Image 1 (cartoon, rainbow, N blue to C red):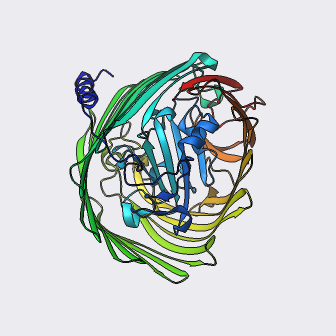
Image 2 (image 1 turned 90 degrees about the horizontal axis):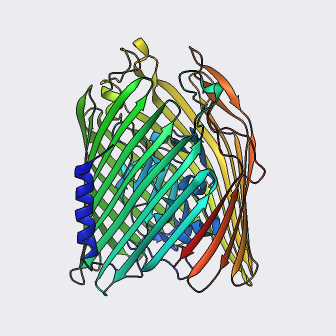
Image 3 (image 1 turned 30 degrees about the vertical axis):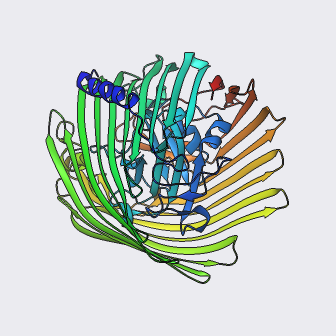
Length: 619
């Protein structure tokens, strides 16, 4: 779509940013996360809305930093996430096409996605468009598995994925070319004058693509043409240390993504802006105010006609961090959110007001973490959610934890008001929230032996979701009927010794709709991942990553009524190589699907075969 007003606003803002010199301290990311010189992330902020050591967090947390992404030479964020335990991917075609990220068996709209602290899921459909992100602009990703509604509110049933754009000081640029006439260029910089910093990242990507679907998708979907994509994105940040106690800042993100799909195309604009102010009231009390806004506009053309969705979300948050003693802390916050959705058929909004708290305490080897939140939703009413966790430190390197939490997902604007197609598949203004209860046990161990390091984590979880919204009422209207049980085991092991680094992951899960005893679609029972890196010399590194997935069930919509079908098991092997040409110049090669595996992530939709990509990068 041509959103001239938005583009003019963006251009004006970028001009202002470039002429400014605002900054935060180099040793910190957006919310005070310390990063080691080797690129490893010591602390996380996402799990409990406070800074804490990842290996001491009473939850299953993974952190992917910039060095991890560059070693993998990932072409998009899906390449990064699919290798993580507890995460499954479905995609309707190649890069840029509609993708769903499923965390611990939960639906894509039952997981909270944050971008630089902004809730970026669509206010209408409820899930996030992953194709709007450029992997070149990502500094790090934090993944928190398990319910987190007690701190973040609606959607965080399966967990939270938070993405941080690049803000580290310095400059970079890269150019990638590859299969399907793929070309991508990115550049960025960050400068500081001691109290102030400015960061700017830009990216452009285009690919001719391949046919997204095949004959199995049915006559109304299949069209044997090339389905490419054309994406532009920009992110910027500035902040200024007004005094020793006060810091203010601004984060901006904008992307435009044009995607072809068989018998149609879509044009999406995503724009986010977040302002914040942090104040240190005393040594034991600090507070942060933030105001964020997201606009998501979609125009989609298909054989059924043209549809347009305009959505807006505004969020105001006030958080207080209190330290009572060395071992006791409290987080208190207030939250207000307004979601608006507009199409040619409806123009409605929903609001949500909330208060939340998190208390953490450590007594010797025992740790306790308690969270609670009360939400007042304009349509769903009042809802209290809570989380309790405890842990025991066997040593400085090994910790075992247990947690129990409740969560919910409030209906989206579409769930409530969408008129449907000719009276069918419509929303329901009387829809209730989806609710869940989750139990989790975990073990974390970090060891250093001689010159090697080893990290091991194991998690056992069981989640029960009730009042799942499905199309099943009169004229297939949305109603609360389904009950779902997700249970599983996650194992991960990472190691490093001399010139070698490696990682292993296993996810064994059972995600079932207990209302009809059917497996949830597109979730494999078993998934295994592995990666291996070898520093051949001080200037050359080789990498290998692999993924093996068991078969999955899916829905076949080529006939009416739809029926179940099987997506076969598959194995993917990817190879990467990187060589340092000079102090500031690197040349990288990535070969994806090395064995040219023929597989599907969604019934009736194709996936890419063997593909090679060459990247020249400067930093």
